[in-house]
Length: 603
Ligand SMILES: Cc1ncc(C[n+]2csc(CCOP(=O)(O)OP(=O)(O)O)c2C)c(N)n1
Ligand SMILES: [Mg+2]
Image 1 (cartoon, rainbow, N blue to C red):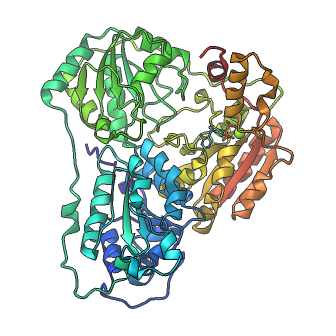
Image 2: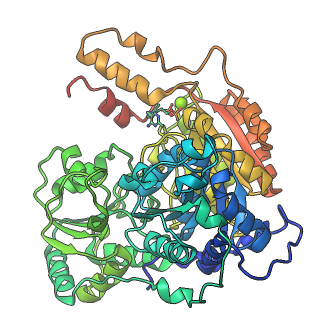
């Protein structure tokens, strides 16, 4: 089973075909590379990257010309974005579905500065993105006055080096070709992440004195697989076999359905409770009897806490934060740990997203997709075991005020039997309100906690899902939606169907809870928690903002009874090819467990 990326890309339409009607340039009848940037464009095509999301800038006008007039705006096709943050977020969302990198191009200095949060999100989410940037001529003599000087910096890559896997500033077209291939190779090799190539404007615009020698590009981007030694697999299997109360922490895994089924086989073979995490994409069927409660975000559900506390052996499938989880369940975890991960290869001195150092008894340095079938094999067959059953009920809906649970309930019922992908959920989302039964049912969170990523990530995911028969739907907080809303224009322009439902509590509510907690700790009035947080007076017309991007806007929906009829209309619009946004005015509030955790008086 391939662990690098997954096979979804093979089963989906290439997308490039479905968008090829848009933004067609007149034929430029250029057959041979004539400039440095033509060589870069050829290298990009050799990577098979179908799209390059971008916001333009003179620093890469050479490359821009090559993409349009040399490649004819296909393979890769440009996706124009209104903000660099959405360009990179779209690439992140695309990778969440396909497991593969798309490209994003950003202008020198300022464009890269705009892109940084999205790059950080992709980094923490371990999603591959090939970012192309540029610099004014490195040779100062060649710089245009003023603008080329302000948009040139020494070591521009330093802006993003702490949260990219690799960066380069190649000095010649041949070196740039190598840099693009290497950037693509490194981004797509586990642990995946963004890479950055800074293209000198002068190098791009230089005339080729002679053609660069052709190469077989595929040979420079070999697929890389890691496997754990058989002896360690056996040690892990022996530990797991001896377990009375095994727990699997199902973390960063691929969207591959065979790997999904292998995890079910392993859990059933061990009779292990399985814990999943809303921070990352679906990793185990949440309505399986072995799934412990509902998937949590920062706060684990009581069933998961109980299972982890009781565990004697814990198998982490690249769980995002083992040490933090131990802390969150009260610290008294006596289990032995088997860790399956290659994440340590990425850790650096700048970003601490590697989390606390966890105790590990057997370490399998490979991807979970590779380890799980090997463990199943090593364990060998076993008789049927009694499968424990947990409660899998959807949240009870309170009468009266419209809550996020009402929103989720009506949305789930209206979507009905359609295969749907939740491309994003709000911070207020209750993990119990939706079952994930396929790796594409849920794509995980923004990764880096960067609010504003939701719309762009969802557009990128919807792009990858276009034509797959899966219905893309996002639930965004109003704060998240407002910061990223202009990403919707890109979806509208390229006719990428997508439904976004805004859980609009008219507040940056997460931080109201933080202010409440501080007030409790300091014995100050909690009534003031809303000041500097509420987004009202005036209320923002979210449906109007959607319409302004070329999407269809619905709402505000203010009553429970209006939810389903409005969702029906919005779903019909999306099925007819539109981008639709439904503004739902929800009562501010998080799940009881999250609220209790966030507002407790003690540290
Ligand atoms: C770029 C960025 N700015 C600020 C924050 C701090 N922050 C975390 S959650 C949050 C509120 C988000 O509001 P919304 O999306 O409406 O979700 P809600 O908490 O209201 O459900 C903020 C401001 C952040 N994480 N990222
Ligand atoms: Mg909000």
